[in-house]
Image 1: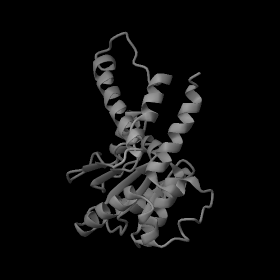
Image 2: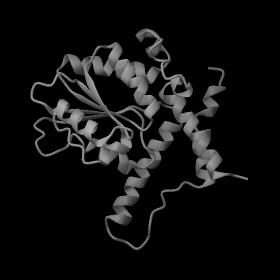
Image 3: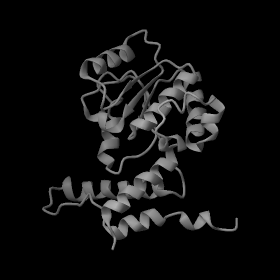
Length: 225
């Protein structure tokens, strides 16, 4: 029988693969024991973000980097330390006072911080980071509204620059299908919720939907090419 909870667990493990293999380890210092080259070679997504960040920093941009996973934030934190890029961080475990200090430090007129790490769910806690002009969604949330709230941290009153949004997606994996489902949910939100129709769009995927998502891209792994 198709157990939705078991399929969701598998989905979470496949998303870890797309982010970085170190998300599987329980060693908190695993990233610190690696060189920057080893850390980047282990994940093509992180390598792409490194290329993007290098270009952004050279052009004087400041970035908000979002991930759903606290473990991934730990890896990104270590990556930024290795690059010696000053930054701030907020996740669900950061107390309100420390959160306020981090925001004030990032928004200060002469702040040297070039990046701010945030968990996607923390994006809806009244955080105003209008001094950043770039948003990087490292991994997309199943619920598109959470990503929209995250993007809104830079789209605030007081923003004086154009804001660019970058969403990193690993092709041929569950990430690609999750993003496609998120787009479909946004359409439903517009057609159903925004027009105040009595029907309610479900946010829960069926067992068949989850199996289709998990199988997406699997055939290419076993192709002769």
